[in-house]
Length: 313
Image 1 (cartoon, rainbow, N blue to C red):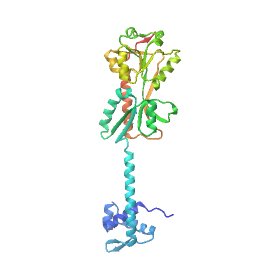
Image 2 (spheres, helix red, strand yellow):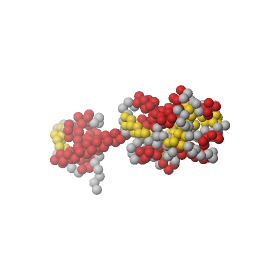
Image 3 (cartoon, helix red, strand yellow):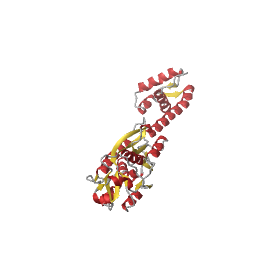
Image 4 (spheres, rainbow, N blue to C red):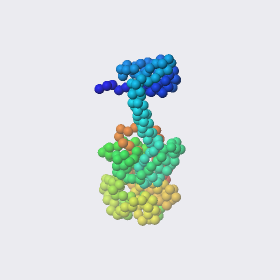
């Protein structure tokens, strides 16, 4: 099998065929005239035939040179297209970034993050999908999402996890609830409360069930609601108790319509982070997204307005 032709020699050849002058070719390619002469001589030796006829200071293609020119233009054009395609792929994420995250994060965390990201990367188009942990990871594996802002999944998820912030789940009650009035959760009353939870199949619900199983309690009265805003409204109207991170209801807590109280002496902590496919290096825009999520998450958790001095009896 013949060896492939040298791309630098081919570029010098095509340029010389267009200009007909070693001097002009050298200027166009930012090389010396002797370098061009050396490249053409090496190419002629490689292909085993003369490619140019020298006529004074000018050159003209031989029949062999005309044949090579036909192929060389196509080769160089293919190389140019290949480079352009790779550059486009290298910019993916700086021009378009597909995100998936939970409804809570969409409402409370993403608006500020995306606004700040837009200032730094104005050409980056964002697409956001609302999905729970398992759905978001599936989007990632299927190539329909570039990054996922999510709770930390199990080790069998097959993704990279970049930590951004942690939060603690707490009871969320109406300001008129007896626990809120007393600023104290009565442990014996915990199993008897009517609970309003997001989804019993969600990752957070499984954490909650495991927590109370460890406490040797079973939460019997549960209502599933598929909207965080609806949960907050229902709890504020005294229809039940929910278990959420205080930052999810930071506005209502600040307004005094909802109160967050600890689950018990033992905390139930969750870890949030950004997921991406294993082995893939984040580009600059994606790294900045992670950094902004880390900063915004710290502010949300630190300023959620939870009652630090409340306790469980």
